[in-house]
Length: 525
Image 1 (spheres, rainbow, N blue to C red):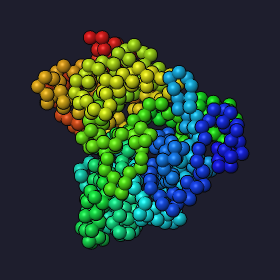
Image 2 (spheres, rainbow, N blue to C red):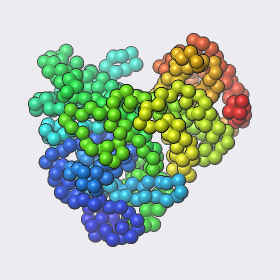
Image 3 (tube, helix red, strand yellow):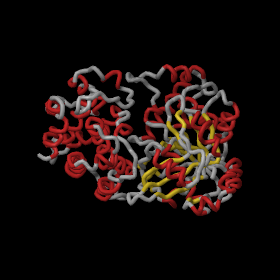
Image 4 (cartoon, rainbow, N blue to C red):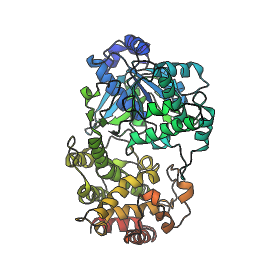
């Protein structure tokens, strides 16, 4: 059984006998329809795209609610396309892992074209221009991580790569967002056709981040006379180009060896993962949790993909903001970060094992219900209490989800301002609340200071997860780290909170076993 067009045709009965759901549509017809009238292109060919957006489109195609498929473009690690997508005819297997130990197995075929965002690959870049100048294109979406939208340095100046692209002009850009801007520029030149540019990355007000990045180039080209200002007007005209906000939530860990073994036992060949030269770990399959949420601001100048038919919530910007804050500031992301920090310090390698630990389980239960929930505004489309209970009772403890604290600990410095800083600011701003009452958020921030030492609770060194601020932070004193307001989203020393965090850090750093002892004491107060 091979994962390819010919493989699923030749072994169709074998796939079905083994419990796989196969595409219920003619891929060749979908491929031709997409080539003629593309409607949706996505940038970022990683696991969450294959597990979520790819499967949403699969369900629409199966139901006959859409005739075109997905186009994916990778702009960072081209080997994902060259070594994984194309050898399998852009097919992949989605293994949805349920808490009862069963797995739904789906061969996802909705991705019918894969491209690289590389000017040196003239065929692919020419095809991208064709797609972006097509009247039918409704949406370009993105999962390129929050770092992907960075075009300015810490002082607000354009990065050297950004400056170079501004000077070079729209037809010679080389940076990631510069190339995206040049594709949008091609759409502008072909008649200022409408489009929605939709960030689906897991970061606050993601549409604004994408818009700010694009406008950096539009303004720069106007100032350098590479454009007369028409492109800037186009990008700022909401009837032409929109940048909707969205909230996405689906845990998609790295492809797991146990899932590979399960699929191999079914008789599927060629499942070996690839580690690219950029250290990306990809396989012909993805494993993901069952729970998923995608809430998108309903702002689509050229019409929208009917994703509401498969569970996506289209709503207004204010509601997206409330849902995003509910998830990112209270009901999931802070809990994940707390487990990541203390999981690394206490030697855990899976999130679900952490949820078997009474101290850690109590930490996240109280962090969510007692400290975070007091600041939540009910968005109306999702219940905060039900969302949080689902996280604590079903999602995090799922023993079949191979997620790790080490993965979640990546880029922690970028996550803290939203995941904890916003709650601290809410406690300070509201008369019925007081930051003096916070006990567990200071503990987590103290845990982060202790984590930065790279020494676990037994005195053994461990590898810190990748983070763009590590070089600046490692080696600083705890007080110096806390002084980085941009990391924590607020000045921690305005009301004594910083001093309490430092005191907790001293307790966590008092010797072997001090992390466990302090954690146990604090969660049981």
